[in-house]
Length: 302
Image (cartoon, rainbow, N blue to C red; front, side, top):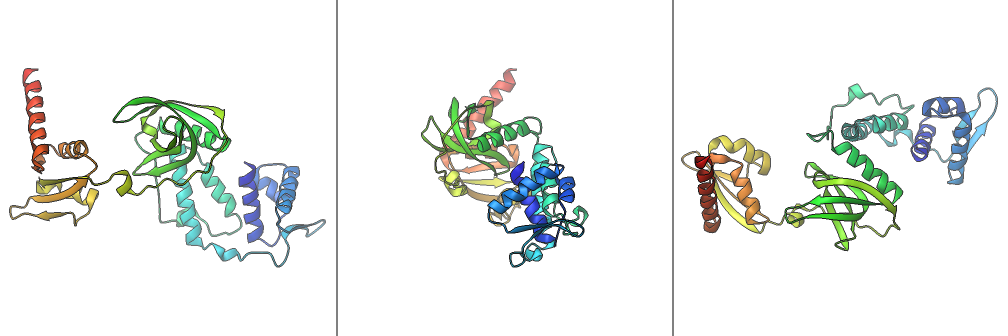
């Protein structure tokens, strides 16, 4: 894309005293004429670029404007590369890695083997997620309406939204946009969307960043107390940390925590099977007893 190429050319010019048009054309796999148009675009944007002809000539940024090429250190560049590679792990391409390689051209220091941080954002949904992410990304860039069927705990509905941001949070992908049905900004989980298509163009409105504070999205309104077998320690540490439970004299683990509602708390406790005993509140303990009885009858009957 042109914008990525312009940023790449500017980055190279900031890192090197002078570079020729043929070198840039080869680097970005375009014609020399395209490079000349890009240089003109940078000049119109206020970047003071000078060109000289003949032997020893080339393209450079005028003296007094150059930024120190050590503005980004090697560890910082490697951290950026790790982040961009993580996006490639979702899309299944090398688009972002190639962009970073172009941005770091001429530094001579950005070597993937020297990085010590690897980020992989791919998941079990490797087949279904990348097409959704690519379609949403294009819809955001082109300002096009997204239409899809959405499955939530409360209902199944058809939504039309104005998309503004792709969000990776809580180990899942979301799209943040203006919902024409709810007349408000909403966060939609990609794995709950089917029949996703882009439609007509829309006139963008001021879009606030999504508030991703867990206390707002998942307010701890419902408190529970649970006793766990000691073998569940690893999971409690992983999900809540080592300071969220105490050890009983018999070795069992007492956990006290909050959930958005009773159903969320009950579902979580059930994932531990017979390794957990729900102590309270009493009404949830009674619900669990009824549910266990219903399941026992069902499987006994079959």
